[in-house]
Length: 131
Image (tube, rainbow, N blue to C red; front, side, top):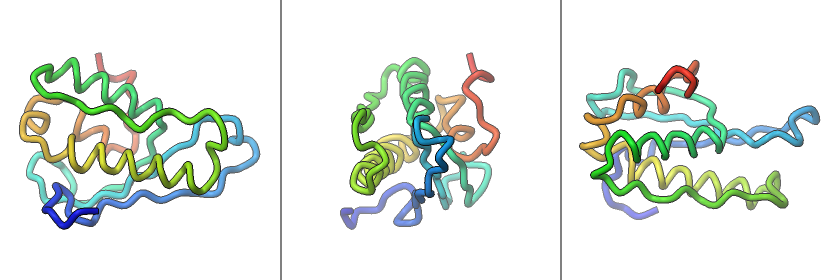
């Protein structure tokens, strides 16, 4: 990671967990642990779980909420070896970059998005509650 000052500094962490056998064929989740001092965020630190499909919905919602901001693509969806350590780490790093460098610190998204703070900080977040 570069040394430039990112919105969450170097404090954004993703953790992985062992996948129970009953979840083996479900879509993997990412656990987001975030510390921030951005005023638009309700908590200085939070920990939430999000599925890749949640990130897809989040990206599409940001694009429609603030069309003047170019929202980058997510890391590609994986169909084989999706539980391997390398695949999980690559996706985690891509999602971290998406949130840190392009989304959370963007001033227009901080003020123009109704879902940004909830997606990043609300453990009970459900996209069914929006739109």
